Image 1 (cartoon, helix red, strand yellow):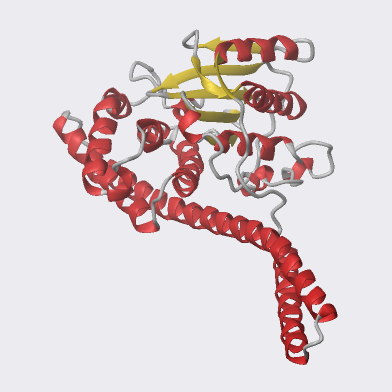
Image 2 (tube, one colour):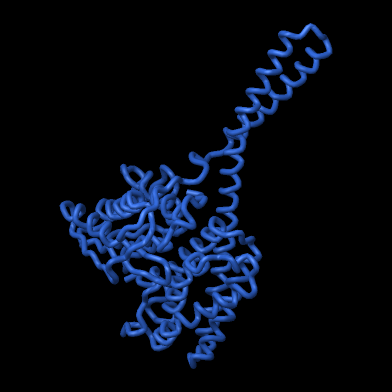
Length: 380
């Protein structure tokens, strides 16, 4: 049930094909080799902390493996797009990568994957190899597109902040020039003061126009109150509160899960996901699952019910936007944008998978220690 989105598909899962299970058994070997190769080859990756370098690759690897199981292929294709977009977006926000570095690291992943599968004795058929190759090529395109979109958003946020901050010194310069013009008896000084006033007014008009054209509601980094706590305790509190409204199944694969985050912000984020699952899911129990990978923690909220359409998979994270069927409701307006903004500020990502067969899953994936990444820029 969407375990691929957390990087926790098991090679012992009997409904998976032998090839998928063999690939999953090599997950750690492939990812370790890939990270070593990327550090050696991509200059921008050398100083990245392990949880940031690893990024969404465990989830991506598992989803790629699931492609090779009949019956999982269509759903895996859908999930690959979501994971690819989050990978590109996080690279834009959390690293000094350019588009070339992003493309290069994914090409390295492709080459490393095939090399490690061969070394591990996993032989892909020609059809399977073609499927994996074409999927990685699609990932490169989607990640690069998401990278470009987020970079553009961050540039606009920077311009908005700069334009806003410019207005204060401009106003001061203008008032000083006006005072000089009013108090000086020198005609030349008054002419120069007039030119200064005209120029500052022109610049002020330009900055106002720039601000009017920028649609972002927030600029700058989010201020987080990072403390050490047990994420499992937060999940228990959220589940206990939600039980009064809806059945919630809490699955703690590991406990305690102690790390460094903003407790209130993370609790509100999980509550938002659970509340959305209650509001828009079926009457089946909601699942709240906590798990870990290397130096990262995943929180998954799953509900059954009508799926979110693929065309709405991004718009639901935009402020005041809702999924198509919920356009007239009082939800999907600010909750999910808040979740993304908080998670991204912790150096993490939010992934979503939705289908009629599997229901809807949202996965928060954050570093176990967010202190080095606190207040990271976010395009949400």
